[in-house]
Image (cartoon, rainbow over all chains, first blue to last red; front, side, top):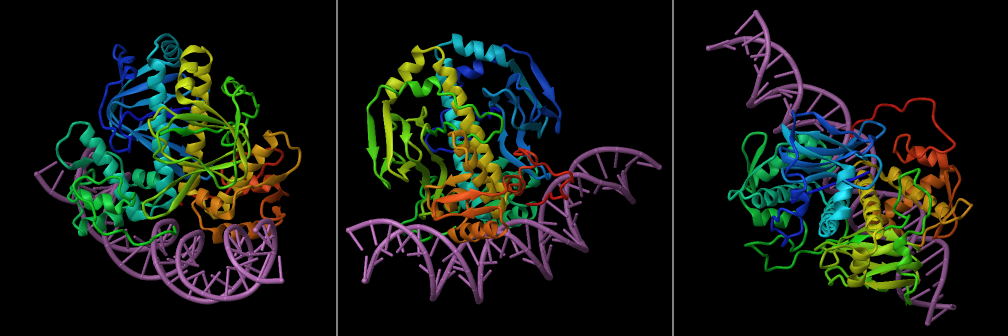
Amino acid sequence: MFIESAGNSLRTIPGSFAVQPTSLQALFSKLPAESLSAGQTLILEGDVATSVFHVVTGSLRIFRILGDGRRVITGFLHAGDILGMSFKSHYIYTAEAITPVTIRRLSRKSFENEIAVSPDLGPAVFHQMSDEMAAAQDQMVLLSTKNAEERLCSFLLKELQRTLNAGALQTAVQLPMTRLDIADYLGLTIETVSRTLTKLSSKGVIETAGRHSVKILKRGKLAQMAGDGDEYEDDWRPATPQPERIRH
Amino acid sequence: MFIESAGNSLRTIPGSFAVQPTSLQALFSKLPAESLSAGQTLILEGDVATSVFHVVTGSLRIFRILGDGRRVITGFLHAGDILGMSFKSHYIYTAEAITPVTIRRLSRKSFENEIAVSPDLGPAVFHQMSDEMAAAQDQMVLLSTKNAEERLCSFLLKELQRTLNAGALQTAVQLPMTRLDIADYLGLTIETVSRTLTKLSSKGVIETAGRHSVKILKRGKLAQMAGDGDEYEDDWRPATPQPERIRH
DNA sequence: CGCTTGTTTGACCTTAATCAACCTGGGTGG
DNA sequence: CCACCCAGGTTGATTAAGGTCAAACAAGCG
């Protein structure tokens, strides 16, 4: 198995914004770029884990398929992210291009050699994995306690954060994935995703513009509705305590 | 943040049984043991991450609390597991003793020094983190697609596996945690946990013996009901293909 | 022995899944 | 160029799984 890495895209912890191009990414800079078209598979669940990848442009989905055909998307990857950084013999998930993608490939052997040699590379990998683990825990929290609306709000906030980290100044978030991708990521159905987005629009919190773009109109409200309790506040904070709410 | 570690307890991947006392655990062997009584907090979400722990005996729960009081248990730790192995400045979760617990403590500074010095310690840590990541992904799959019965069956199977790895020869699984702990771990309510266990008992798949012990009567059936599709088979495998089932 | 906390069971209700119909927009080919 | 096609998306009606509320029951424990 291996760990899908997340440059900043999966980093949901507020306060850790700085986009330091880690020494990790530098590893790939001299390697040739490869291209994938939308829908192509980069790595396949069960295959021998031979390479580590750096995503240069485009987006991918990371997923597993259950025996009965159900699909679970455990994450999305975007430009700057690293993929396949693991120390297991086989990949435990599939990675598929959502948009046209360019990547750089490093053999796992070289990767491990570089780590053994370079003194500051080890810590960089540890940090990276810690970030991923934190993101995984956030996702577990989302999946075990949040309702449909909270899930969508959390998702949109994270995508907004990623967009802003990438240097954008606006609040228009690009969502390259389909509704089905979002549904499989949030543990919902496409109908519920669609309905919830419609509801958020009619509440004036967001504004959809085509299938793959959403404008965040009220970020504070969105953060409040995400249900993380005082974690995402920026320019808005409720003076009144939230009502009791213990059950699921 | 940091990563809750899992010696073998969170390792759900079949085929990776061997309980090698890693070089990681050797790090702690010379340190003094500390005791906690049931209910005591070992580490607190938000505190500065100063130590790494090795669980010698007993069990702990790892959880986060949402703003509105909801609790999400992201894992359980048992004898042999390592806790707090992370490279973040603050703990992102709380660890609380379920039973009386004894642990050994290593300062994070020492831990990082040891890693920098010892050549085979780095890879051990990487592997550990990869295992944890795999376990986290399994949990995401469970939380996003499985129904109550499948969740309970998956949980019981994992606990059985852990019991067997620990050297037991029987199929009586000890569950030190309460129903509420199980519910908060599986994203259910205590009522649903209770009802589902009752149902599994009446189906003859398990047999409860007191609050903290469950006997697995039909392991193959349990594996089938866990919904992982041909992943946990041991001595039993259905000849007939499963019916189509794509939706959540 | 009698609390207190944890667990089970029952009745009812809410949320999101399911089933189904219709809409939309970006190609493609006549 | 436009009609049609079709995958992806939206909206509506209904249902079922599991949450909620409530009450009774069990098991430690002081």
